[in-house]
Every structure is written in structure tokens, then in C-alpha cells.
Image 1 (cartoon, rainbow, N blue to C red):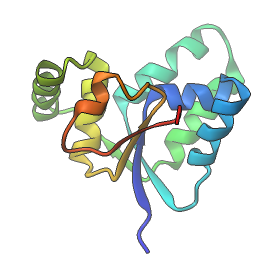
Image 2: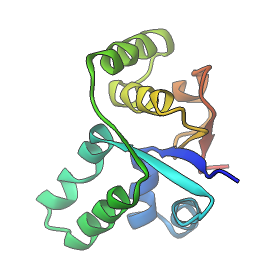
Image 3: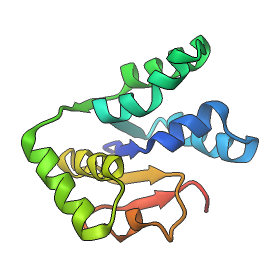
Image 4: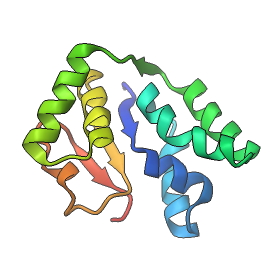
Length: 136
């Protein structure tokens, strides 16, 4: 059976490492699920690596880098991806980085996009992507 192609939002990775116990456990269950393969991008890397690196939190940097190394697919930045993100942000009132993450997930044909956002957020209005929250 094929693995579930999954894009995790930056807040899921951050929660896995430094979140409150309940949400951290949920995030780690997803990241440790052997039935999943993960999609990453430089946009995601940009959200989770610089701050811990700046604050010299080496253990957190290593955690994030290990996740990126274990990913099965990396989607690169392209003008087409950026244009799609602009359309998504314009149509759904998405934050620019969320729009880029959604574009990456759509381009990679992700089965799920997992976030730490509430279901009332604009991210859940995107039609062509299954978005799930850690909060429920």
C-alpha cells in the first residue's frame, strides 16, 4: 500500500520540538508515522531553521534538519509555483507563506496538509487539498 504523501506546516514541526505536551505528542505521532512520506520545500526550511540557529538552539536545528533529510520529496521554487501561491492568497485570504506551502503541497499531489491552525482559518477554505488540524 502506498504511503500517504503529507505536507506538514511549520507550526507542526515547531510543536513537535517545543510545543505543549499534548500537541507535541500529536505532532510527533504524525512525524513518526511509518505510513507517511513527507514533502518539504525551502519555504518550510526558511520558517523553521533560522530562528533556532540564531538563538543557538543546536538540538532544535538538528531536529529540523533531520526531518528535512528524511523527507521523500522536495519541491523547488518556480515562477509557476509563486504565481499559484499569489492566486491562492488572493482567492482565500491566505498568509503569503501559507499560500506558498499550499502551492507546494498541491504541486506535489499531497494527500494531506497538516497544520496547527484552527479549522476557522482561511487555510481550510482551499478546495483542492485535504487540510487537517492537530487541534482536533
